[in-house]
Image (tube, rainbow, N blue to C red; front, side, top):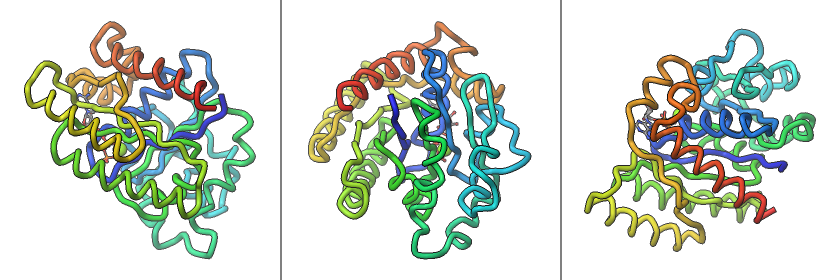
Length: 255
Ligand SMILES: Nc1ncnc2c1ncn2[C@@H]1O[C@H](COP(=O)(O)OP(=O)(O)OP(=O)(O)O)[C@@H](O)[C@H]1O
Ligand SMILES: [Mg+2]
């Protein structure tokens, strides 16, 4: 496996960072070599993975002030290149004709060392998101199972399609991952139908695995633990584990 997967959605709170952290922990536990990259100035992934944010960050790498290998931090759930609040200036500070290709170029030297590189992005389509779209081989769109997220999912999809047309024709849209899922309600069944239809219109799928809503996710994050370590038999660990198996099969099938 040699994939670069971005978690992407214009919607805040959709589950991008939670999913990025779960993928890093889950694929690392399966024996894959994983690098996570925090592309959000909120630095939630950096915090979740209990990474040391002192030293070089992804901003230093993108601004060519640090070598990418020097920015890598090792954690129990995989390697990570951290973010800090300073990343908020990226749209102002990253200039030049190749500003959207900086991450892709920087990753060239580390790509062969990892089976999976996970990009956690912010809910805004600016220079950092465009760098993620240019560097990725695939995208996953996490979406909270509600009507507002359905509308944003459609918009996110069309932006990804524009990126495919404009600069990354090989980019795979792996699918939409429903999070905060409440099974067995009428509203959920209706939403699932709507998401399935919207995904079809976007030439992609709703993943079979859904991530149920559970407070354990927030508690684990507050404790800076991964969900598999925090509550191995809980709903979140089970759901993310099933999702990781589903994604692994899909990656192998589509590569
Ligand atoms: N399945 C779930 N059940 C309960 N809470 C969840 C679940 N998934 C995520 N959360 C919580 O929802 C909030 C938003 O999740 P997360 O930070 O992963 O979203 P995000 O898409 O990365 O947000 P942002 O766009 O702001 O970066 C967090 O507080 C997280 O703990
Ligand atoms: Mg986030």
